[in-house]
Structure formats: structure tokens, C-alpha cells
Length: 331
Image (cartoon, rainbow, N blue to C red; front, side, top):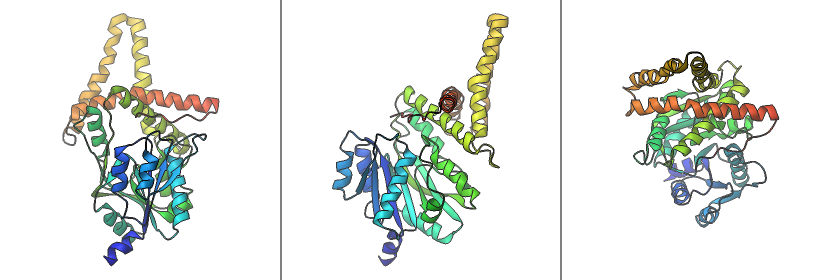
């Protein structure tokens, strides 16, 4: 019991969410009484989220929604409240409100960070709670299955070392997506490491049942790639440059070449479009040993280049006009 209390006193939890309903209640239930302090940051929920959190004894931050919302800003404000309530913690666990933390994760994460003082961020396996619900949920589940060991980035669920987080100013609050990988780039530049453990960490509920939801999520990803490349593309890591070039190639250049070919040669020019099914076949063969549905993953990887390209254009348009984009929400 004493050992558990010592572990509990070492970290706090920041949960962010909006209109998550039962998902939020389950999320908070998975973390309360396990950490020294839990803070919930609400971004303008119209359901009973704020009252649910308060009734569960959680400190609540209600964001000023007159200021453009980002998850990065929400997490930063959560950390500020957490440090107002307790300065003794060494680590912060970030959790999205549509996730539940798996029992045993906190012990694994705290013990790992205690033993490895050169590591600033540790994360584990995030699983989709209902992968059978839709093909879109299944694609998320496959996406979460990233390599174990030293990593380039973490996701929304991760435990971070407070000193490292504060020293670098936390998340870049203006980013509408991709804030975790961007922070990881800066952490590595400062000499820190990011690590993924082969341990169950959290269960996520994407709740995606419509193609339009998947499309918006992919578009947000393209925007994040563009902004990441803009910020750190010339760094030694060339952050998000490859992903951005891929979107421009498959979502922009190839369609333009096909259309130009059709203008010159009519219907025969459309033969060049066969490069897309060829790419699906190539990716299917490449991933057949690592993915439960290699054809499905390949199809969505190729199809996703079009919304990613739109996200790239959205970022370029925003930069040209000097405007900040609003969050691209898919649920």
C-alpha cells in the first residue's frame, strides 16, 4: 500500500474532452483515485460533461471559447491548473476524454520513467474499443499499432516528465492538430527521448460510422502534416516532409497528370489512373504479414491522399491570408 501511495503522489492526470457523455464518465472512472490530482478541461460541452466531472470530484477547467480552441491549448491549461493544485508531481498523464486507461498502466509508466532519466515521454498500446463497429474504427485500431521501443512521437495518451514539458513551454497552443509529434520534435532536439512500451495503455472509442467522419479526420491529418513540415521541415528530422510530399504527389500531381493526359489523348489518357489500383496492390503485398486487413488498409491509405491534399491546401490558404484555421472536427 505504501508503494502504491508513493507512485500515486508522483503524477497527475489531465483529461480533455467535449460532449463525450458516457465516454467521459468511463474515462474519469479509470483514472480517479489513482493519481495525486485529476483535472478535466472542457471545451464548450453542451451535454452534462462538466457536472459529471465535478460530481466525481475532479477539478474542472472550462475553456474560454471566445479564443480559438485547440487540444494543445486545452492540455496546456490543464497542466497550469494541475500545477496550481500540486507542485510536487514529477509526471503528467495526458488522456483524451474518449479513452479509458487500462489498469496497471500507471505503475508501468511511472516505474519506467523513474528508471530512465533520459526519457521525457512514455506511452503504450492504445487499442480501439470497438474495431468491429465500422471499417473506420478498424483503421484507427491498425493505426494505433505502432512499433515498440524508441519512438518519434506519442499520441494524445502519454505520460510526460513535468520538468521537460515546462522547460519547452508545453504544447504549441496554436496547432489545430499534430501537437504531440511537434512537441516530441522539440524534446528530441533538447536531448530527450520518446519511448513506447509493449504494454496496454488505453482503450479509445473513435465512434466513426460515416465516410464523412473518416474524410474529415484524414483532412485534419493532412493539415497537421503541412504545418509540421512548415515548422520543422528543414530540421535534421525533416518533420512531416515525406507525408506532405506524398499527399501532394498522390492527391495533387497524379490527378493533374491524368487529367492533362485525358485532354491530350481522350479516354486512353485515363489509363494512367491505373497507378492507383497498382499502388493499392503494392501496399497490400507489403503489409500482408503485419495487418489483419492489408487490402483495406492499403485502400484507405491511397484514398486518404485526397483529403490529406485538401488539408495541405487549407493550411497553405490560411498561411497566405495570415489567418488561423478552426479545428477540423470529425465527431
